[in-house]
Every structure is written in C-alpha cells, then in structure tokens.
Image (cartoon, rainbow, N blue to C red; front, top):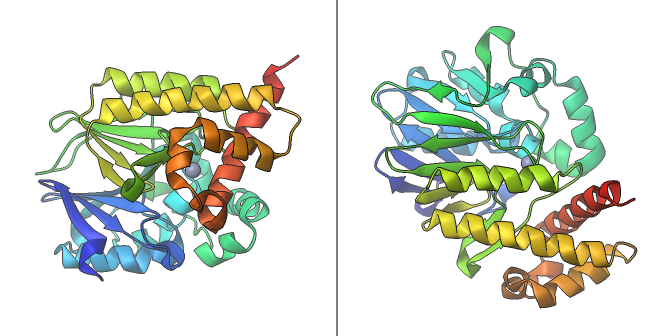
Length: 303
Ligand SMILES: [Zn+2]
C-alpha cells in the first residue's frame, strides 16, 4: 500500500485510494475510525484487497468493522460489499431500502451492469450476494451510530440514481456525496457531472439544494477525494448542471462529440481538463455517458 493512498481527512475519518483496476485517484473509500468502524462505498470486488490492506494499516481488525455503507449500489461503489463482508464476519451492509433486494439477489443487477459496462464489469469482478440477515435498508432521516466514532445522518439524494443516498456528519459538517455532486478532479480543481441514463435533472437539482441546506463544510466525493468550501462546490455544480442542460437542449439532434466540443468552450471545468476530455479514456467515458443521461432526460421532457 503506497503511503499517499491513505490519508486523514479529519480526526477519525480517513480516505483510501482503493485503485480499482489499478486506476489511481478514481475511487475514494472513506473509513470512519472509532472503537467501531464503518466504511463508505467499499468499491468493486477487484479493489477490496486494497481496502483491506488500508484497514489493516489503520489497525482495524475484522471484528471492529461494524457497517459497510453504500451511497448507491452501482458496481464501482458497492460491487465488492459481499467480499468485504466475508472478511468482516460481524459487519452489516447498509444501502437504500430499494437497493436491498438487488444486493441479496444480485443476478439482475449483475446482468444490467454487464450490459452497460461490458468488459469493465468483468474486470471489476462479480457482485456477490449478501445474506439477508447481514443487510439493512436505509431511508431519509435514519441515523447510523457507531461506538466511539462519528454519527451519520441519512438523506435521500436521487438524480444520478433513484436509490442514491448521501451521509452527513453534523459535528464536523462533513457530507459524503457518492455520485450526487459530480466527479471531482482535485489536481485541476474541476468538477464534471456524472449523470448517466436514466438521469433525472429535476431530482438531482433538488438533491443538491437539500445538501446545501445542511451547511456542510467538507465534501467527501466518491470520485475522488475531499474538498473544503463544500457549499461553493455544490452551488457550482448546480450551475454546471443547468449550463449542461441548456447547451444539450439547444443541440439535442447533434452528435454527442459535437455537444462535448461546445461544452468545452462554455464550461470552465471542462476547459480546465483540456486534452483529458478526449484523451483520458475513463474521463471520456464518464462525460459521454453523462451527456447521454442529460440528453435522455431532456428528450423525455420535450414534447
Ligand atoms: Zn453511480
């Protein structure tokens, strides 16, 4: 485990670069470290050994891991939960209540994941089923308590996915956004939308409003790392989604690459990414799927 792949965000809170498929700075798994331990978004099966390595480096024994939380059940966030639960036999998985059945019987989820991601899904590793007694559903207003650690408030933040949750720690005003507030590229100070089909712009904007109302100070992105000035980040992302919607709506019948070109001249975040927009395959795939989701939403809305 490289030293920079594990760092402290706040006392009792660590971020781990779990490097699925060896991709660095793609997915952060957060570890709430107290007498009892929780992790948020464990990642796909292929990176669980890296996460376990980080937990061991933090001195976490399997018996102290109490909860594995997932902001949503997409494979890059929760696909490896079953595998992690095999390591920590006393731990429980917590997901949105509508995600429970898909983690207990992941057959359909796995098939649809393969249909969307193809080879990448296989490389991420199969989604293992989680026993019914080791999973619980969360909904708006729930609290997750750990002995000697931080307390999390649960909020439903649909948009990216209908079953998306965010977690808020009110003491340190820390917000865990999963995929509800975009993808953060720390080295460039840029955020890009993650709005794949079946994206709901109306719900996503309402979710961002709800997050702003909590007055968070720190924002912990799943992709990737944390940022200060959380409200500024969330407001900026709202503006970005509105801009994307406006540009996509004006050019609904044009090819996605042409729309992406236009956005590069209109969205300062994409301008900051520069060549990466087209040359970084992961980034290009994220942006293309985000455009597809935005386009799909606007087509459904237009008469
Ligand atoms: Zn997702």
